Length: 170
Image (tube, rainbow, N blue to C red; front, side, top):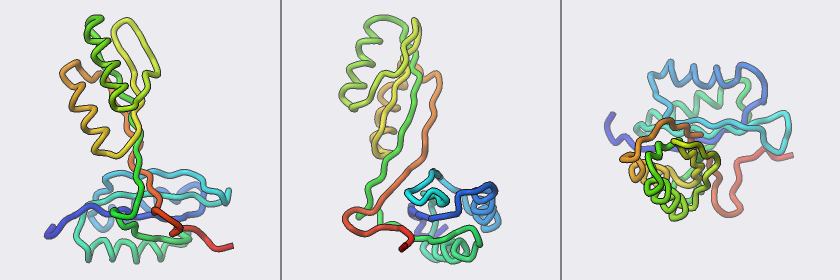
């Protein structure tokens, strides 16, 4: 795609079965890949917030946003300006630790990246790291030489900075 860039879409949706399928199916029909998606309940218990990150050109993303707005279970859709948005992601990384020196080095890296060791075994450490995607990528690149045994990432969640909110007026 020409002028392809990353976009963050926030959607307030009804918190019920089938909504995630409907949203994902809309992207599938458009031939559009979702880079990440996170979903969770919000302050209004019957609603949930979806944070969807996609790469694409401006015109295609605008079309997807318009079509999302037409879905019955979607209450509100907004595009977030990456420059005015706080984004976070969480990763659990299980790392091979062949010896005490490697264990010590990995724990030092975890401290530098403000992560936490959440599980320890004879041969592995499991690390929780939270931050921007670039921070998580940098941590993973740093510990790859030790051997990443397993990795799970949540996908991006995001909120606009300041007083601007994506919410339903009561």
